[in-house]
Image (tube, rainbow, N blue to C red; front, side, top):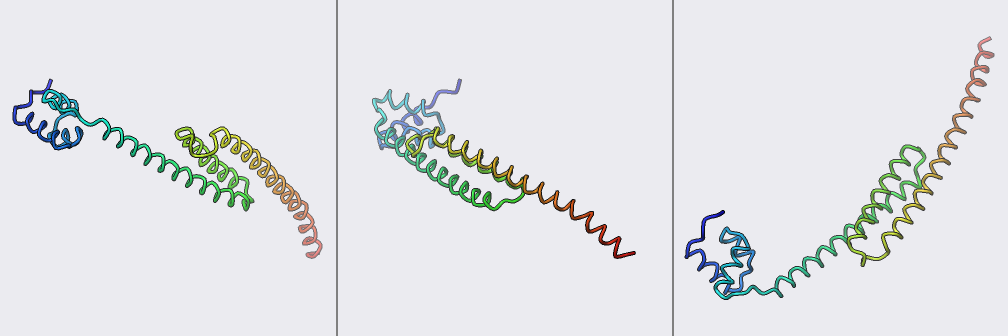
Length: 171
């Protein structure tokens, strides 16, 4: 248990409260807990304005919604950049890494949607779009791997023909 506040500190709490200073600001300035400030202000007949606290909370929530919307928009922008790179990818490993990056951006966007459902499309719509996208990426990866196998097969068939042609030239 902490030591009791002396009379001058209690009087300072009451004086600051009457000036309209917030409870948390008083607590920080004095170096005590907000509960202590509330207790001594209440004993002196002062009540802190709950409307100011509610307004500050609403403003903070609006700021956080705006930040989440900005982060979500950034995630979608980065996802769009990744999609553009995916369209040009010819290496299955690069395709896989880009798809994983896209999935990460989409999941981040989906999580933000859960926090603030008023941002637009629902989280389920985002998940559905992500599933469709991943299906498309898998199909693209198969196409790339198939093309790579065809190139490898053609290269293997050409190699013996080239070696045979060289042997004939040497004789």
